Figure 1 (cartoon, rainbow, N blue to C red):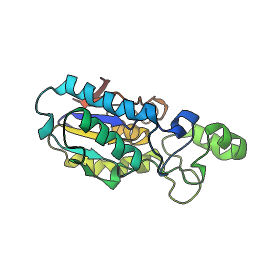
Figure 2 (cartoon, one colour; figure 1 turned 30 degrees about the horizontal axis):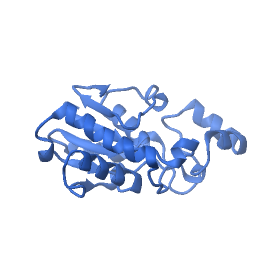
Figure 3 (cartoon, rainbow, N blue to C red; figure 1 turned 45 degrees about the horizontal axis):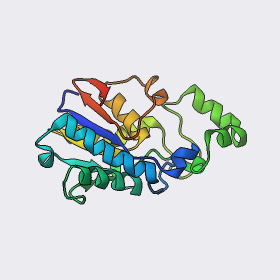
Figure 4 (cartoon, helix red, strand yellow; figure 1 turned 90 degrees about the vertical axis):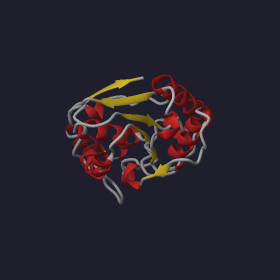
Length: 197
């Protein structure tokens, strides 16, 4: 896809992030560090884009941790905290029955499925209702990405970032599931590549 830049922000830290728990589509609030990361992301955006930030589209996953991150970064930019749109296609990958567990818990309680996922991180779908593979998330976000026609700020999740990378040709299916997605930083997608800001 040849497109305008996307400024992607992963939500700030939650207690479940700090504990290494799979959040998936569970709603979890930002912790104190996560609130600070939201403001930090706003300052980084100001440094990247300067003036004109008020005129860009702002899109967020409808989950609490992403909405509060968006509101924190918009506040740091001096913008109306509520001046953004949510899109359900940006919600986090569903981990089904594994949500709330750590990877250590999964490997102990469900070793065969954990090994199957290790063999195919991109295509594997965990057990349970609402579970998805990264490939399924990529299909979910593709129409949204194709609809963007100007620079856009997106606040979403680590799993969504990996799906966006592959969809935009900025990472391979083999590479993306293994990449760390930082909190409080900006992942810039432009000209078929990616960089952290």
